[in-house]
Image (tube, rainbow, N blue to C red):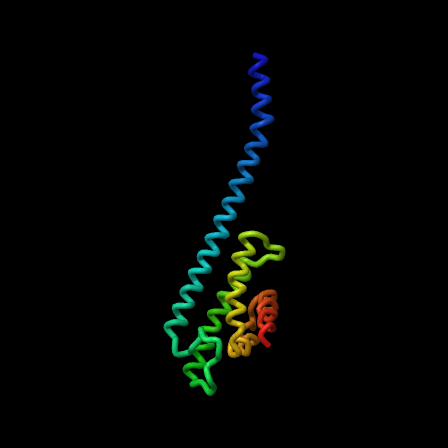
Amino acid sequence: MIWLEALSYVVTILGFPTAILVIVREERLRRENEENELHRQLSEEYDNFLRLVMDNADLLLLSKNSLPEPLSDEKRERTDIIFRILISLFEKAYIILYTDGMEGQARRRWLSWEDDMVEWCARDDFRTALPYLLEGEDDAFGKHILQLAKRHT
């Protein structure tokens, strides 16, 4: 009978911390899976955006240079709409993925998005449009992308 009581103490002493470790590990894995899924969804949205850009190839949005002025009203409006979609996507990525002091996989995911932002900020027409594109957007995101845009001025 004493050995059963001793065994119950051993199970309590070892089992409780083990259960806590298992719960913490499972929670971390769940969180990582959620972050991976969010990143996958954002990447899919960006892929869809690039298809939109491809469907509007006459706007030359993937070239490094802006279209020569003057643009027709129709081309200007399509460009503005596409830029608004892009800013919305970048803001969503910023809100979901960006945190101060990121490390590891989270940092790699964010830097991938930041590379895309820097690439778009290299375009004169995009940088010129930023002030009105950022109206009503998240303040922290606005400050961040404006800092990225300053690299190209």
